[in-house]
Image (tube, rainbow, N blue to C red; front, side):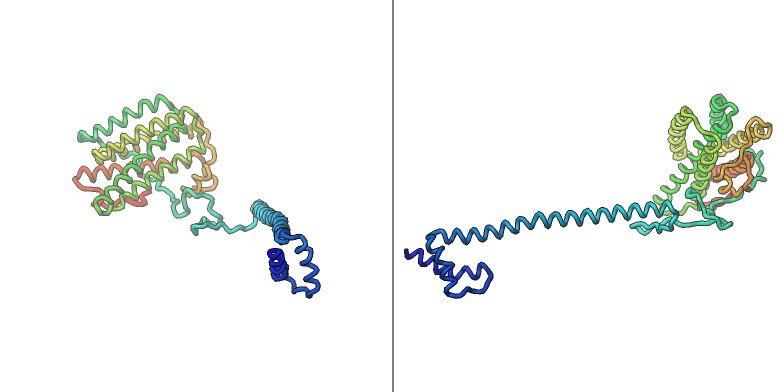
Length: 349
């Protein structure tokens, strides 16, 4: 009995605090506590029932809160998707959308001399030019010393299988020629670049000159791709020839730059001959004189009504300039000097 009385006294003091309400009048408190006292040791159980009911109510509210968060997340996703749809519609509708980048890089908007927006990303308006087509096409370096003769007959031997394979299909022949002609400038420029880094010295402008030559030859290829579409076996031949020629020229340039440049000079002489034959077939009507590709018109600043014949003329002039540059580079080496000792013929078109 003593424990029951003590429990009732304890509940009388704790019940108002646990319920959070004001203490009831003395009579009401007695009325409330009497059943608990009558229930004996079940008074503590009643308090725990109240606590459990509160926890159950909180547990019921938690899923409701989660449902609310899920609904908000769906609304955010829907708004994001709606924003993407609106952006797509605006792009299709031609709206002005500012292109930005996390790195702060934005594509530049260029125009040509007529104020028309520039559409080529592979070259810029200031990189275009009008080549000198009055250059002497008949200049030839006569082989005198042993290295010259090795270079000359190497190139002549390479011409034989080319003539057999392509015959008079000069469009495909030009593509094949340019995939090889773009290699020497890149290899030479790369090796001179590494040499300049190793020796802490300038190159005399020859790195830039040779890389310009490689880029110019690559633009020849991009142009003739619009004129003649290569077949699958011609693409396979390009892979083979380019792989072999790159490695052979790389080793040759390491061993003897004078021989490497002389070989390229003779290759350019053969290219002049091939493009001259190409022009003869166009003039004779054996090859259709189609309109010039737009990329050629912009790159060489040709008139809007230029034709394939005009393109071949300017490409042949480019090859003649490359002939002169490489024979000149070889002569510099034959005189016992290095290329860095002689200013490079930059922008020689």
